[in-house]
Length: 165
Image (cartoon, rainbow, N blue to C red; front, side, top):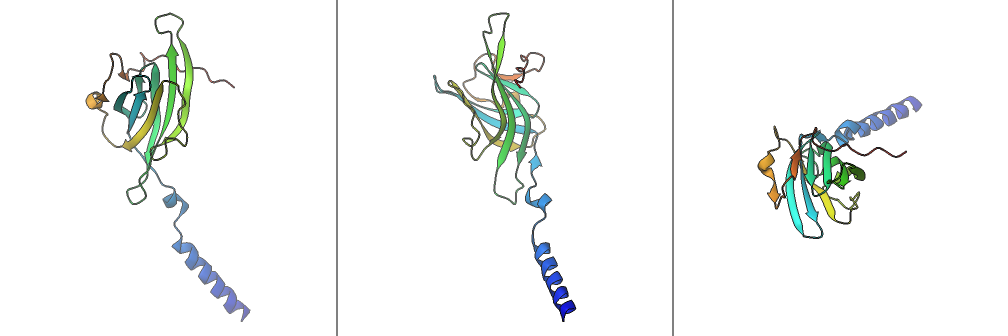
């Protein structure tokens, strides 16, 4: 009787475990090659929407934005995109002593940009979506871009600030 009960419990437990999704499937995300971002200058209400390749840097105002990773949920799950962004600001561009300061570094979620929002008095940047493309097209900028804004070659981008420990 005891062996039969143990077998029954074991069989029920295995059946239950087989019905659960595996942790790999439950938490799977898809790495993408392009992040679509939107930005606003809060003083002038100027907006810009642009696509950035993962690993590339773009400039908006005095901000430099580098996308380190962009991931989205599989099609069968609730839509969600998240990008790991590093944002720094360079002040005094007209002087030789350019000073770079961190503005934001972390994951930002498209569905909840306020969850880990960038805090800047003039500019706001948020993720719209992560998507796959061969390359982001530089002409894929929508809005009123000023001269010098948009995709920046890594050799022309100012160095990221030092990390304070």
